[in-house]
Length: 175
Image (cartoon, rainbow, N blue to C red; front, side):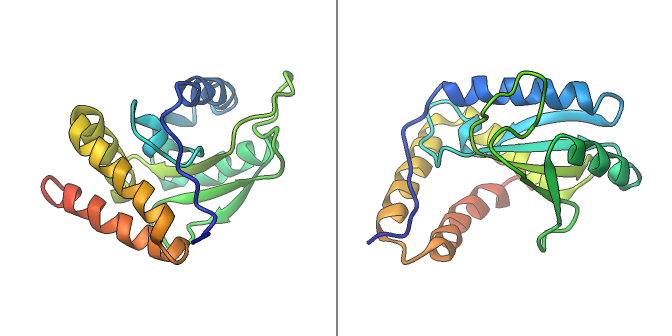
C-alpha cells in the first residue's frame, strides 16, 4: 500500500541539522525565545522516523507572539495559525532555504512551532521526547510501530491516529 509515508533509520545528521537551524533562529529571536527545542522522533537517538525535523520555539507568553511572527516572517516562515491545536502556532517555509541567512543553506525539511512556556502541547512534546530518550526499548517499539503503520495504514490520517494511541498511552502515565 502506498500512502506516501517513509520511515528511515535514525540519522545523526538530524541532530546536526537542528543545531544549524537553531543557531539561525537563536540569533534572530534573541530576547524573544526562551528556548528552541528539538522535538519529535528525529530528536531521539536510535529512533526510526520520517526525516522531518520538528522544532518548538518556546516563548514566555502569548503577548510576544506578534513580535515572534514578524521575526520569523523575515526569515521566510509563513504563519499558519494554530491548525486546531491550542497554544501551538505552526509555521510553513517559503522555500528550502528557510530560515534564510547570509549562508544560503538548503535546510532539511522541518516543521516549526511556537508555544508559550505554559502550553499543554509543549509539555506533551517535551515529555514524550524525554521519555523516549530515557527508555530506548519503548523507543524501539515505537519505531517498529511506525514502520508497520507506514506499510499498512490507508493514509496519513490512519497512520497518525494509530500512532497517537501509542503516544497517548505513554503520556497518560505521567501527564
